[in-house]
Length: 433
Image 1: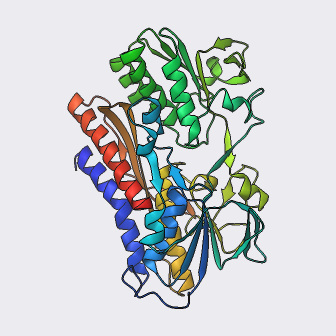
Image 2: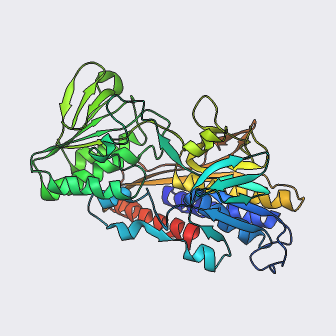
């Protein structure tokens, strides 16, 4: 197969794996009649790519299972394509999604509230205001929290002045506004964290799309990336794109060369590296180190890594029975922390729950991840892979997937940018449509 054909195949494989899991749930499906009495109660916490997809697919696999989705936000703002908003390509409406279809089309009981406590023994979750929901199975897809103790001077209050813009929502608009207000000739500093963190290629796509905006509007400006790491996702492809599109505008500094910062002065918009260098920014974007969301820490579902260990075939917690953890909060072997990976995990988790409820055998799971990045509106790059279980862990399948070819022509890059937009439309429809 050509590279493009393989990538098309991988995009389809996510849907195919879900269909295979559905087929494994014999006699059940979207067309099955809804029973008057629910077969089981499933509560899903978190309405992002993981939680919303899992809630929807449990209902699709077996409509007789009652599913309640708990999500505090009335609408969900995605992190994918948030960089396109920051770079001025879209507005916030383009990355904002409703829960209407989950409620009205798929029969999910959507509760807009916050979970404050989980009781694994009583099999209940407590909502803000002390209301409780009982469950037979609980799915947690709460996303990330920030490690505010990782950088001196950078906490939640400082982040109001120096936005991370790494969780969707208002901070995306704040960072975008700061860029619009910046003088021509200013310096933008982006400080990515060490691994693991949500969306490994994200900081470098952000630098790319900010550079696109600056090239068009403030061409004397510069971008400095001070990175805690020695290398980053899709590095050769990003660097090639920067050299072709934004020569001299973007500088990347790795951790041991002075890229790893240790202190932030939010008032001065300055950062200080571990080797003592001070860097002053006109716009400063610090992306802090991350861990699983606080609710799973409170529930005792994390290990020393700060993330949740699970059975990677079913995503059931290694610590508490009948609780599943998916998405960014979990330890999922070779799968990265991405929206596509969360969607893939969600479908496997949904199949695991439905087969368990019905006393059936869980199909052998497979997983897929595809990650597109925009270097410019008409310049896309990607990486894709298929995964399976090996020795109890999720591992990449040798010979599958791959990355965009380094020396592809402009037409190829343009098509990959179109595929990126098509991927976003497809996965958001699959999640919330």
